[in-house]
Amino acid sequence: MTNKLRYFVANWKMYGHLNSVNSLNKVIKFKKKNKKAKNLKIIYCPPFTLIHPFIQKLKKTNIKTGAQNCSFGSTYGPPTGSINSMMIKSLKCEYVILGHSEKRAKGENDNIINKKIISATESKLKVIFCIGETSKQKRKKLTKKILLSQLSKGLKKVKNKKNILIAYEPVWSIGSGIIPKSQDLENTTNFIKLFLINNMKFKNPKILYGGSVNTKNISLLKKITNLDGFLIGGASQNSNKFIDIIKKTFN
Ligand code: PGA
Image 1 (spheres, rainbow, N blue to C red):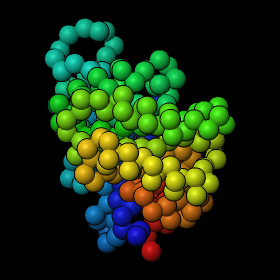
Image 2: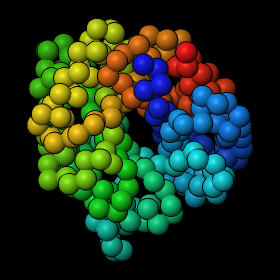
Image 3: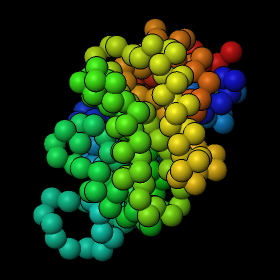
Image 4: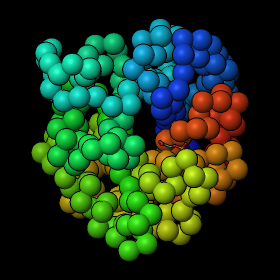
């Protein structure tokens, strides 16, 4: 079961400076030396300013890089202050996180996210598509309804499903130290998986969990049968903690 957990995505959010590339040394060494780490997909998503230095640093490794967002459209042009999927891909960056709740909270709706997913997949980027309910929606027992709506609107007319990973990130769990009860997480991820297979034409959906993953709760989280990996925010910025989390998923 545990070797199913192959994806470890580090979401650095709005953190990091040029010297941060040096903190990758430990993870590079770990990935190279630890037999069990060889086949893992470790993906670093730093802020835009660090994508190029990260790619340079990770060039001779098989650790990948991702952006944390992108604009839609795949040509050069306005709007000022935007970076589109084609520009990210041209850096040899392979992934992009889309639909993160911290962007949704700033006004990104399902329609915008859908355009971004289409644009990113057309640019041959792999998409880490985030979905999740707020605490209010959870209290009102709307979780499934919300997830279903985010998935069907976000993935509308998206052709290449193979390059899409779904990250279930309950909004109330991000940065709070609180994770869902195991049974709830099992049920929700099962619901997501079945919906993707039965309604969205996914053949083999990959589902990640994100929200307060840390060195302590990973022993519980790794037991969730439907998961293929984790999207890790705060804890991923410290290489020792990030490696520790990964190691704890090994048998
Ligand atoms: P967290 O963030 O691990 O710090 O809760 C996860 C995320 O926002 O992707």
